[in-house]
Image (tube, rainbow, N blue to C red):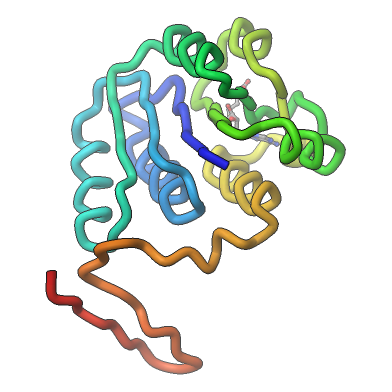
Length: 176
Ligand code: SAM
């Protein structure tokens, strides 16, 4: 399944670290890229650096208009799922989503999300109906969706690769 993240409402003065982590989680857990409504080039730069060392081709596009992105995505046959504590419980709909979505845009908010997003989404999904965090919600959502398979992903053209060990740390530095 093709997955992208749409991050709404990023406030450059408050949300830098959280939005960077949304991108890191998206990249590590199988998304192709992240669209950001804010024009924060710092986020783009940090994630590009991570990708350049750790591989893959995760993209970040800043300054997007969410309505335009959602409309274009749907026109191309994509589905949209908005993560919100007000939505249907993930365990009740994740099977339907796996069956119906081939391309999926996963929307996460920061501050109050416009009601139009709830209306535009094909699914409003709660990762439990309690308030918590967009980073946690995204990680659990991607993991449930892919049934844990994403945790074994190998990233192409990685300069740095960890050699998993029971104890200690081992890293391979690849020639590129
Ligand atoms: N007050 C905001 C609102 O009314 O939507 C929520 C702020 S919350 C810290 C930021 C984002 O985390 C939300 O927009 C949502 O994407 C995600 N989030 C928080 N709790 C969630 C939950 N239980 N299930 C799914 N997503 C959640």
